[in-house]
Image (cartoon, rainbow, N blue to C red; front, side):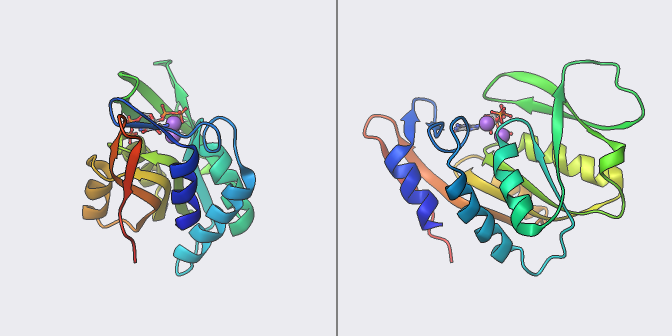
Length: 194
Ligand code: G4P
Ligand code: NA
Ligand code: NA
């Protein structure tokens, strides 16, 4: 999506360690007009799916997912990260490892808000190694619902997550895929899509 790629080029800051900061418009301050355009793009990319729920994970996925929920006209649920070991039977749970933060989190969703009736679009801001996504997929599987699609704002195409998820057969759409970036020159290369 050219609008998002241009914005990343303009306002993204590339850090050492293959991290791109997008906190002036995506995951700290939020440009909701951009989110609305992203939501419309998701709507058209997943038009062939009969989606009745959106699932994301706290915290940075929530804003993007909420605006997408408006566009799709469906409820939005976010998985919560929880440190506690004692989680009762009212929750679906998955373990998610974060490479960036070097820690493990339990991710939980109440059984009240996800069931076998649900045809889910998973949304998140970043796809790197795909650990967060694998956790969300496993939660949908546990509920008996179906993952209709996965919509990502920024995929880091040089990390393994996207390839793994596509190889599993999921309909994954990333609005911008970064194939390479360099902190020294602040240069960034996007994958050509369609
Ligand atoms: P993975 O889920 O794809 O395996 O990603 P990884 O563990 O590597 O990333 C951990 C966190 O860092 C995730 O957010 C992810 O969205 C974010 N992230 C990964 N690469 C980048 C990047 O290049 N730039 C930015 N800005 N973020 C990146 P999180 O810690 O789960 O949570 P939150 O920030 O949404 O609260
Ligand atoms: Na995230
Ligand atoms: Na994040």
